[in-house]
Image (tube, rainbow, N blue to C red):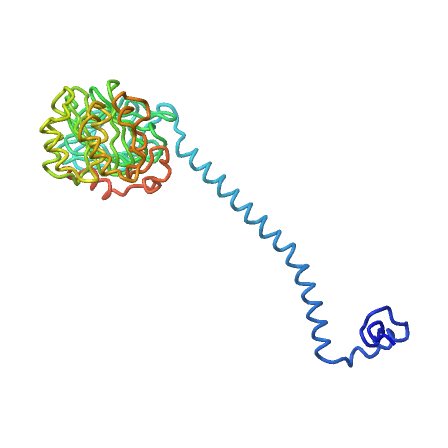
Length: 362
């Protein structure tokens, strides 16, 4: 007899009806382990059957939640950036002496297009820039709202100091001076100007583009630049730059002609330079490509050692994009990724705005 084919020994085959009937009758008296195994198998099957639809439900729920979140963010951003043409700006806070249309300024007032605000030597006014940020006008200052509408908001600083913090795409907000304009790239900055337009711009986060049609200067966070009354901007420099570096840079900027590669002021500048001063050296090279023949180009190669080296000949010939590898290697946020500066989207407290407006710039 082949025991492996016998149902009684191996449970293989069909077995006859009498044996199966006896098994059903005797099943309550089966060994406990066998009953437990059978119960576990049945429970496992039921749980597997239950898990399948539950997993599908969880997956669909997560997908729905992500879709709702994405839609909510999109709608909030659209609401933030939308603004009616000529819509007035709200005065969020005012202190000391400040006037608008000849009357004292109070919180809750509205600054209409072409309206002006003037502050006394103890005055300060904080405005909401549409829905995209905040602006504080410092003491002894005068400001006019010249343009406001979808995608473009412009004020003119007639004199004094302002602080602004904006979270919006590049170019949405700008400050006009007599012969130049500072365009926000999604950032925080302070701007000082006298009635002629001479002053200084300091960037706390992001970038600001300064231009007057005859030239443009990009100023990154933790950097400052001098502004001349004729509308020209100097070379930006890091706020931690050495005094000797700043003095040599000012002398070079005061010279209208392109310095020679062996200019003593240029050599003093390079001797005082640190890795953090790459923004100044690169800005000089962009403005004066002929300096690629001398030590300025070599100093940049030493500072930006991990970046691809632009061709010296391409720089000398002013080839478009020749300096891009070095610009991209600078340790600053990219201007096209303004949304990553999300802390600038948070409402500014009066203390924070006042600290920014009164911060002492070097």
